[in-house]
Length: 95
Length: 483
Image (cartoon, rainbow over all chains, first blue to last red; front, side, top):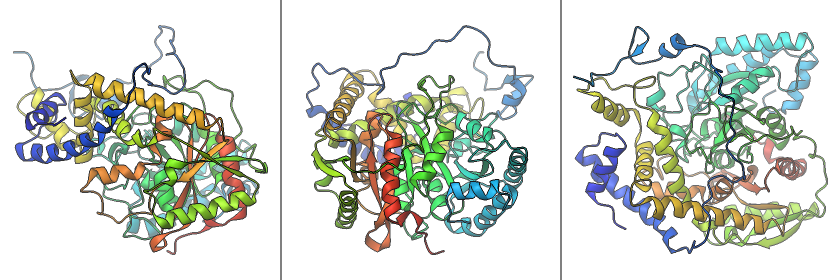
C-alpha cells in the first residue's frame, strides 16, 4: 500500500489538525515508513480468528440510572479557556 | 536514608526515628540539588508535599498508619492530581490544574503517602526516550548523554537517582519496563484491569495500565498493595479479592520452570545484553530453576499490531482535546473549525500528531477491516502463543530491551528505530499479561541492563517472588549512579 500526499491532507483534515504543505510532505515520508512496517500483518492468515479487544473475558458493567455527580460547574469552568455566565464560549457557529 | 527499602523507611517512621516532614524535606532537598541535571520532574510543590507530610505525621501519631504512610512517592504526570498541574508532558495541558484526583492518587492519599512531585514523561506517554516531552528530555542518571527510556522516564530517573524512594508509572507497550531497564531500577506492569485507569490520562485504553517503579521487588509489592483494587469508575477495572503481594516473596525457587522464548534469544539482542541475561539465568539455575525453551511464533508481529491498535485508540481518545473546556486554545482563529485545527496543531507535538494521523487512517472507511480488525485478530494469536507457552513453564524470561540506553538524539529522527526499542515488551501488553523488569548488571558504556519477567494472568505475587529471590543473591538493585 502506498500513502499519497492527498491521503495525508485528508486524514489531517479528518483529525482536525492544521497541516501546511511542508509539514504534510515530512509526515508523508514518516507515515509511509510506518505503514511499510504495519504491512507485515497482511501476510498472516487470520481466517476464522476472532478479533481480541480485551484480554479478560469480561462484559461491560451497567449501573443504576441515578445521579452520582454533584454540581461542580464553577470548579470545572475555572480551567476553561473562555467562559461567560456559566457557558463555554466558542466562535459564532450559527448566523 | 536515600538507599534504604520502603519497609525500612516505614519502620523508622513508626519508631519515630524520623518524621514524615523530615523525610520528605530530605528528599526535597536532594531533588532541589539534583533535578536541574536530569529534568526528571515537571512540577515540584514543596508546600503541598510538606502539608501532606504533616498530615501523615498526625496519622502516625494517632496510630492509623500503614506501610506507606508518610513515605514520599513521585507521581507520573499522567495521573490527574487535584490542585496540581497535570500536563501529561504536553503543551496541550500545560495550563491544566486538575480539579479531581485519579483513582491511583486517591489510593495513595488514603494511606497517607506523600506526593513528592509530578514526573516528566513522553507527551501523552507516546515515546520510548522521554524526548517527546514538551518539557524537554529527561537524562539518564547513569550517564547524562543517554536517554532514560520512556514514556515513564522521569519516574525511572527519580528512583534511580534516589530523588524519591518510589514512583508510579504507566505502561502501554513497555513504558514502565523499558525505562526501568535503562535506568537500572525495578518496575512492574500488572495484569490489565488491576490498577484503576480513572483519571489516568488515556492513550490506548485497551492497553494502558498503571504500575509501580522502585528499587526492589519487595518495594514494588508494597506499592502494588496500595495501587491495585477495583474502581467502578473504570469500565475495565476487574473485581477480584484483594491480594497481599508480599505473601510469596520468601518462597524457594526450586523446581521453577523458566520459559525462554527462542524468538527473544535470536538475532536482534546486542552481545552485552545477551551475556548479562545469560549470567542471570545461571543464578536462577543455581537457585533450582529449570530452563525450558518455548516459542512465541507471532511475537515478531507485536510491533506492527501495536502501531495499529495504539494509534487507533489514541486518535479516538485525543479527540477530546479541542480547546473548548480545558487545555490549550490557539491565540487567533476565524471560526470554530479553525479554532480546533489550530489548537490541536499547536498544542500537540510531532509524535502525538503522527500517531493521531496513523490512527485516523486505520480507522477510516475502507481500511478498518484491513488494519484495525486484522490487528485485533493477530492480537488474539499473540495472546494464544502465551497461553500455549505457559502450559510448559511457570514464568517467561528474556531481555527487557535489545540494547542498553541509547544516546539522546540518536533515534528521535527515525520513528521506526524508536518503536523497535519496545520489541520485547509490547507482546505482553497486547496479551494483557503482567510484565516486569529488574536490574541485572551493566553492559556497554557501563549502562544498566534489565531482565524482563512475564507472568501468567494475575501472577504478580509469583513474579515478585522470582525477582526477590534473585535480589537476595545479588546487589544490582542497590547500586546507585555516582552523583
